Length: 92
Image (cartoon, rainbow, N blue to C red; front, side, top):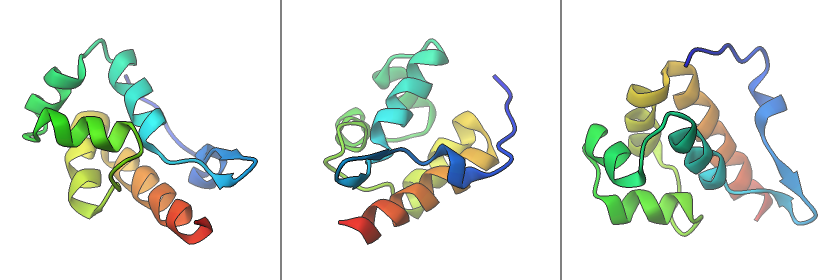
């Protein structure tokens, strides 16, 4: 999959409480790529339970997680999910 994000701010999802955790979008991207969470975790050298916690919104997307996800989805994705997490943190 290849995509270009012209304005990453447009990709950040909001709900009635503010910005939603980026984990749900990460889970969607993994599924769109036809991977299981276990397969994705293996490809980015991360424990499955850690990736599941991120997807479930129970763990943050720190710089390391963002970089690892970028190896799977592209460099732009790294920036998007990290900025999304920072905005999520700011609104909580």
